[in-house]
Image 1 (cartoon, rainbow, N blue to C red):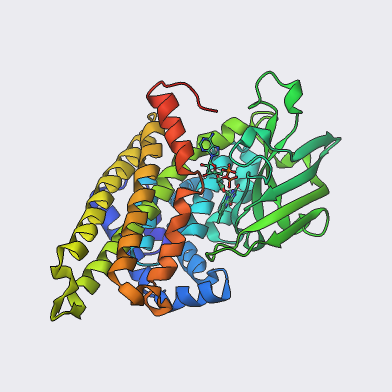
Image 2 (cartoon, rainbow, N blue to C red; image 1 turned 90 degrees about the vertical axis):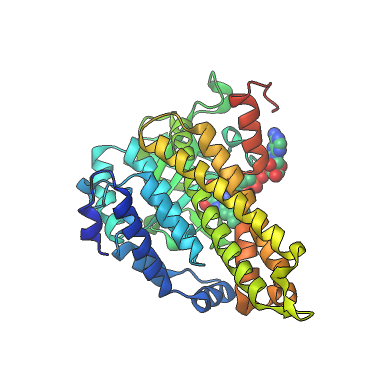
Length: 396
Ligand SMILES: Cc1cc2nc3c(=O)[nH]c(=O)nc-3n(C[C@H](O)[C@H](O)[C@H](O)COP(=O)(O)OP(=O)(O)OC[C@H]3O[C@@H](n4cnc5c(N)ncnc54)[C@H](O)[C@@H]3O)c2cc1C
């Protein structure tokens, strides 16, 4: 399936066309087997070929409107794509990052910014895969970030530090959140924060320094230092001071996309565990004949099915423009737990071989653990549900 084929499906994608898209994604992923991902993981390299293939096929541009060179499909289609990528044993981190980060530009950018960047993002000429929000001292308390952007004539001067800015070394552009008005000068702490679309190619060495952070997974994550970095004032997205709301606007989509990856991981682990449990013979019978082995797999499967329903429900509401924060948060919670339950069970099912690199289980096990911490940790999701859905007192 090509970009054109995707573009011709502009109107709400029907089930048949989504099935075709899933099939095409599976076929593409078939060209990137476990050996490919093991090598990337071992060498901590960016999956350039995979990202290029997903871009050329048009899958990476599904959420970009047709007018800007994408296929203008809904989040439900993006969810189907990411689910299949993960169910095939691949990793979609670079894909989801571009999908939701691009949304900030799409929803709040000026016509000039959209015309300048979105067509190039759609073709893959430029990558927008870096999202600079988290800082070492503020953590989840985003309104306490200390990075500042100070207006000076036709420029902003950026100072501060970000941490966990993933793919900064492999992205041309970054969406950056910085404080433009000090916290003690605004009525609400969520005011006075602004979003910028920053061309990192021009900034590196001119006040922007990127330092890789080696982690337990191959995520190309970094810390970033801003030292009097001057950027054109035209980099500001939307209105100055409204940036926190713009970032919040993208969070439901982000959580739904992450949930889709977890649902895909759950399928991969359950399939892998089931196949091994049927095949591996110990004490003269397949280990899956023991309920102690079979039941955890069955339970993980059931958890995955439930999480999948919630994920697609959240995506449907999102596509219809209806409120979906409860569903998006619930989907992310259930899906990240379902993927982790399946990962743990899959590793246990494989016994010692679960630890051997060649089975891919240990790599996927490490990768799927992330989703209970990033992009938002489980406790913060539970806090959201406690306060905003159930009406209990705010806990922080
Ligand atoms: C591999 C990786 C990639 C990432 N990529 C990006 C990226 O590209 N861009 C970006 O901006 N960020 C990124 N992040 C950051 C990620 O979003 C944060 O790590 C995550 O939001 C948690 O924030 P924190 O690490 O500061 O934890 P903290 O806020 O320090 O929290 C630590 C723990 O305390 C708990 N906690 C804190 N406050 C409360 C409370 N009030 N009630 C209950 N529990 C609480 C949390 O749930 C968590 O378990 C990435 C992180 C990782 C690990």
